Image: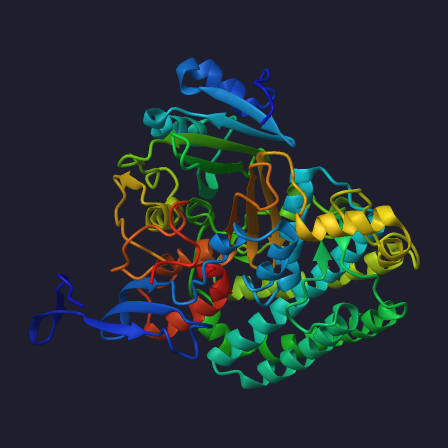
Length: 158
Length: 401
């Protein structure tokens, strides 16, 4: 990843102007901007970006997790945001530790997060506080384990 | 399954009926299970239950090299395999930093738009047959056959083509393939007129689709839907225009929207999109040069041509290294989104500097669009559930991966 740069993205500039502590790091790679946000600020940052009239990040395109096991913090959550009105894209990254990973849900801000967070819970085991219906979505409900974690073998257990 | 709701009936308070729709059902378009709570014929709640086609594609990608993953991508949205191939290749090219030659880009655009037409034909045929209009199904599959014959001519495969590779195309297309494309493209407008004659002003079709499955713009954006679902609610979001990829900015076409936000509006949008795709294909045919590169040349990442491999020692060595060790992109993450026939297909690719992707995530438009099903059909009749599932144009391979 490239080193920290002065934020060229308007989203980052506004975020830093609003609250410097909400932005832990800014990364630029292949023309994409990633803002690393502390885990306990995700809901506030999400509300700010969605509600700001100059940014309008009302569309959550994707929520993905990368498992960096055995490096801690293990889980890197990536929220891909889009502003249809302003044609802007930004990615928010949150790092969570492996021991009982849990974070605030953003379903109140973007209803589409409902299924994305269920998928993340199902395949990675991250819990979302405040999620209206947190249960497995792809795997059968009685499945044990979280298949997309790096310590879960690709061939499964017999 | 128990429910705590109570409904008022003539005989006093009662529990609503819980009806299971699927996973084996002709109208769920795949292995989809919807748990419906009904008060007579009125839907009180509709909960999709998915995962019946989950094959762990994202996990499998982590143990394959980048080139090997391309064959897996065909199976995600199996009605538009070239779209998936394109998305994956674009993401990998972005990650590595490869410039695809213009000729290959134009061929990719042409084939992807043919895929859009082919996918919309399946959608139209199956949506219509669900609602009782059987003729449209037979007609649209006849046209789709012609398109699949073109895929077979160009890539050797009717459906799971895996024709795009990192850097361009897998093979040079046969010299007269554009004549075949021209024949299909010239015949298509009359066929689309045929479908419109059967449906657009058909009173039964209009009664089954107008006002059914209404979604307003704000709801649609909040639910993250994309593609024709979003455009039929009046939001002009088309990735080909907003964040152009693969030289789409050089083509002249319109974003088709509608304001109704119901099943009929989505029907209009998709039919109009088929006509726009024909426009793009004609422009692409004019731009493609008869000879030229079909793949970029990057030593160490893109395999050398067969002649080079057989006649030069460097060619042989690079061929050997690429197919045994693979090539390693720089570490980093990219998110590449494309406008698939169903909506925003996003590929999130994370590399750790090794030959195998560290994480690949497919943001499937059908997965997100299916989430809007309760918003579309709650409060309506059970027959409208079928119309709403059809209008979301889901492919379970994408929903479950």
